[in-house]
Each structure stands twice: as C-alpha cells, then as structure tokens.
Image (cartoon, rainbow over all chains, first blue to last red):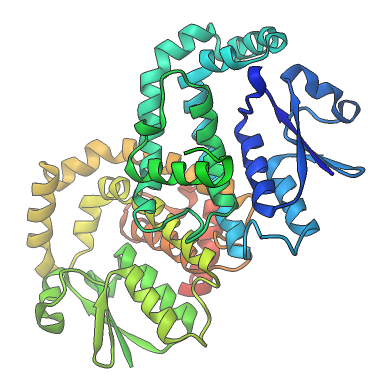
Length: 222
Length: 222
C-alpha cells in the first residue's frame, strides 16, 4: 500500500501545506494509502536520509518527494482513477495557482510562527526554534507579535483575488474541486490548524464558503 | 462579417486591454472580422447607445460587449474553430487569470495616464482629462510623475508570479497560447503601446520572452 510520510505535530496534527495538498490528492484519487506521522527531526530516517523534506511518497519500492512531482506521478501511475487535473489546462491552472499560493506562505509564517512552534512534538521544538529564529533574526514570539497584523492584512489582500474569482466559480477548478483547489486549501489549512487566533470566519465571504466546502468534502469537518 | 468595435487613439492605435484580448481571441479562432476604430466619444453611437464601453462585437444582428462574454459567445458559436479554452479547466484558468490581471490595471493607469492622454484622438482628450482627473483628484501629469516609480515597482512585483510560473511553462495555458495568455498580453500591450518610457525590456526575463512570442504570433511584430 502507498505510504505518505507527513509532517506531524503533537496529537498527530498534520500541518504542512504541502502534506495537506498531497493528502487531499490521494483522497480525491481514491487510492488506498496510509499516512506515516513524521516529526521534522525524523525526516532524515526516511529512505536512508534521501529526502530533506516531507511529504515523501512510497509506492512499493519507488519513493519521491516534492508535492507537485508526487501528484504528477499519481496521475500518470493511476490514470483510471479520478483525475487531479482533468486536462492539460487543468495542470496549467494548478501550476499557476501553486506559484500564486506559495506567495502566501511568508505571510502565514509571520502570522503564526510561535503558534506553529507550540503545535510541534517536543523533540522538534529545539530544531524549529533555532532554525527559524536564525532565518528571521528574531525570537519566535516577537516575530509573531510584531508582524501578525501586517501579515494578516497582506494575506487577506492577496486572497481578495481568490474571493473575487469565487464569486464567478464554485471551485477554483470549476464546478468540482481538483488539485488547484487542494493547493490553496493546503496553504490555508496550515494557518487554520496552527494559529491560535485566526479563524475560518476571518476569511472573506466566498473564500470562507469555499474553504468549508472542501473541508467537509475531504476532511469530514463541518 | 463580424465587426469588432475597438477603442482607437490617434493613428489608429488600439490601446484598450479588453480590446486587445478580444482581437487576439478572434485571430486565434480564425474567424473573419473587421475592426471598427472607435473613439471614446463615439461609443454612444454604437447600437443606438446600447453600450457604455468597447469592445463591442456585432455578429449579424447580434451585438454584445464585455470581453469575457464575447469570447464565451465566440467559443459557443464557432465550436469547430480553434478553441480559446480547450477544456472546462482552460476556462477556469482564464477566469482566474482575468481576476489576477485586472489587479495590474490600476498600476498601469498610474504609470502612463498622461501618456495615454497623448495617444488619444483630439476629440477624446477633453472627456478623458476631465473624467480621469476627477477620479484621481489630481491633474494627469502629476498623477503620472508622482506615481510612476511606485506603480512600476508594484506592477513588476505582481508580475514576478508570472515570471516564476513561466520558468515552468512556455505559455500561461501550457504548450500553446489560449485565451488566458491573451488576457495578460492585452493588459501589458496596453502599457507597452502607450507609455513613452516603459519598454518590453523592462519586464523580467521570462515575461519579456513570453510577451515577444505572443506579439510575434498574433501581431506580426518581432
């Protein structure tokens, strides 16, 4: 059976945007898989240290990482299962959306970096704190408290494009959700699952409605 | 034959982003049409004043405006001609790209509003100057000179998403250009055709390369 190595915090919380993307892709494709909870500091144990980041997918003896590479592999390997792109243009849409959605990650990190730290397994906290504080040149609490409001304004401003778009389309991919939807969902789910203050209701109307629909369809949450 | 009423400045310059979009859509679809140069102040004469803006498409007795509505009409009416979307996801891609591209228009207006005024037919200049100066609360020369640099930085920053995307894809729509490409091209062509200082070489590498390719394919310019 396919194994998906996913970043896991305390209480088995999956909270990497990229892991969410691939998890929803697997659910959509209806291929059986089992998730393997993986701490940051356990990634080095996967495939004898071949990968620096999760998600990692094991399918028999084949292993790969990078979320887009994984979903392209799934699409090619399981062509009779429900498609993640439906067409070449569906793949183009997913690639553009991925480029756009990845520009939200910096804002989300600033909004919730200390909260993310609190979600980690104990054994990951030292590594996370040291690496992120070095990257941002400040301590986690200050990064979050000093930047939260500005980063939130930036995030919601960027999301206004999606809100406008969703006035004209039920899902990003059209009348049914496809991988382009899962990309943005993974990004926003990361924020929702980790932030102690930001809630789904803080999204604008159409983003909130869309998010809740995907959450219900693929995560069974209402 | 189909008639396309297009905004025309002096020397028959077409310079509305929406008119460019539809012009390229018609060229791509290979349906015969004739462009009708239209000044701002002549729009009221089309179809007995039915429309407030161009492009307006006349196909026999049928007339409509709004660029996206026009291309959806063309796609439905001429299904055997080359498609503008190729698939439902191609239409979704075009709609998302349209929402994104329209956020560039404010920056472009600020970069070139006085230059745009200089491109107009004499009979349009009074109307344009009065309406735009009222909207911005300043005179055209000041709007452009005070905002050009900031608006240019904003535009290029927004376009960085497109540049990143175009490192992975030859065209926005994939391996061949479709309406999603024409949307962004129309927006940027508007700037290139009107600005006295901004040139194609000011785009980042992949946007420049993509722009020149479309320009050559559909406008015969090298």
